[in-house]
Image 1 (cartoon, rainbow, N blue to C red):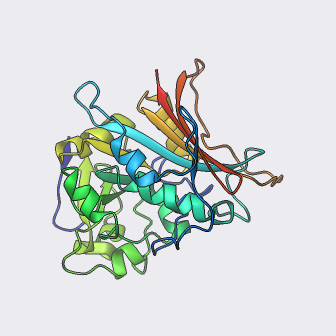
Image 2 (image 1 turned 90 degrees about the horizontal axis):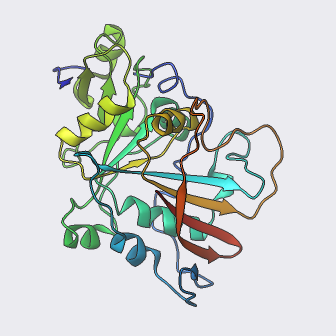
Length: 284
């Protein structure tokens, strides 16, 4: 159950997820493409618009809850970061697909570690707004941050740069987060205090369900993804495969998962742009 407080959580694997962040798209719309985005599967096409494709994908509510997407990027050898951030793995095609995926959801959810590392900003209407509105969505998705400790510096752009006409970020936390952290942020965010001490995946999704979400987008980090996978709450994986060999000790797109039985995925689509692949899977 989610309750609101007038003023005011990273959980053991959620809120302290400092591994890598995935807010990799540029703040502005990508420039005109120098080469076309191709579709390789299911039907080869020489030039496609990812925005049109992702907006037309079917995403139905499951078990009276929102459809949950996860959007991740990895190198050809499985690394999810270069020097600790994922931006170096992206490119022009990734920015286009990233924008299309964000245009397809009602809420974006990220763990506090990702939000801190990538200095998240609040989503605002952009060139996808008319398409979103035509599909029955708000002009821009809303942002939710999951954290137990509420270790969110007040100078984060999502807190410090909000305009009056932009909805506040929703901070999903436990029943008794540190009062000093709550006071530090105050009414610059909307608060959702769950009944448990630590946010759990079912309660997080239920909180967004109560706010009318039909499609929720997960943007990491990998430990947060692992908890969602363990809870059986990932219905779709949008994976960008960057044409790089990175090496190093980077973790995988899902980390800390305890699930022994893998979730089987169905390959729905493969796009290509300048050697990068953009794969859409759905859970069987």
